[in-house]
Length: 113
Ligand SMILES: [Zn+2]
Figure (cartoon, rainbow, N blue to C red):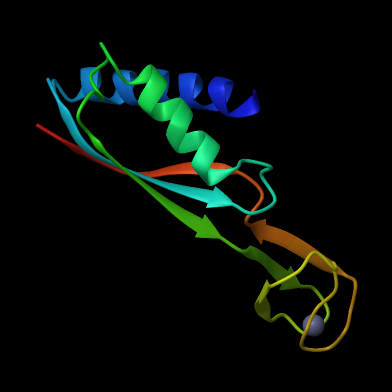
């Protein structure tokens, strides 16, 4: 399952950050999941709960914020959020757009002790 490898990478990233900050415990993890990332939120949570044991993240609160697709239009210079995947600017209809958010999963915030 895709989510398992995502969580393993996330846990590694968190442990590295915790180590750099001399933290012994992580109390809250906030992530942002792009709807285009292909990650299923409930599967991610399940994977997290499976892998967190014996890591610094055991007992941490796991927050997932779903991020819609955000695009920047090169034609009218406006930024928009797209409800559906129909790559064109909802303001002017141009297809000359750049996706600036919503494609990946990001670690947004960590609360450590
Ligand atoms: Zn536009």
